[in-house]
Image: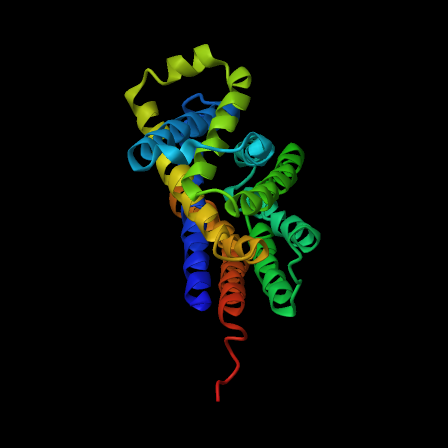
Length: 296
């Protein structure tokens, strides 16, 4: 039964990574129409908080209830993680190629794996470490492939996004031990909405949202790349370890790279293709053990 529970959690994290990997489609388009990185984060936070609030009202209003002493958990997931991470990540996407922005964000498993040892008493197993090295090596190959853009400020934003992203796995794991996935997701985005409000130039954002096309992009990025993946990832954290969830989610850079090629004409080259293959091998190894070992 525990095996089934763990596999369900890992599958949820995997699907979350696939959806997050598609965020560049929305972000690039919104940046081109005049949105800033902070305004994109604001839209994602506002829409998600409202949608999650409606879902909870319909499903079970009791899910709104949290303890005052636990507010720090949602400050962590909403402000220290989602808000900080996304501002840095959107800025990185604006400066770098999609695959480069995503690989820089995926310095996060280093932080998660390191922090999970003292906080959650998780063991740093050989399999987890080897899978991470294979996956991260594949992502580095994607980053070093042909015709990819990387700026100095983009490098800074990318590394900071990795730190912020890592914090969601830590705070989310702690919160998932006490609260429902819907509760965690709602309060994460409520706190993020409050935190981003003074930063997003609300009058200008209101003008941008007067366009029907911009509204569609805004709802699309909120539902496809925020609500669904955060629900899946938070649910997955309640079923599997924070370290393993972080490594599984490293599939996202491979997805972002494919999106960059298909939608924006970014050229990965042979090295990039080998990098994606390495990520897949690392994920298989994490899930099943050595995939090349003969079973007796």
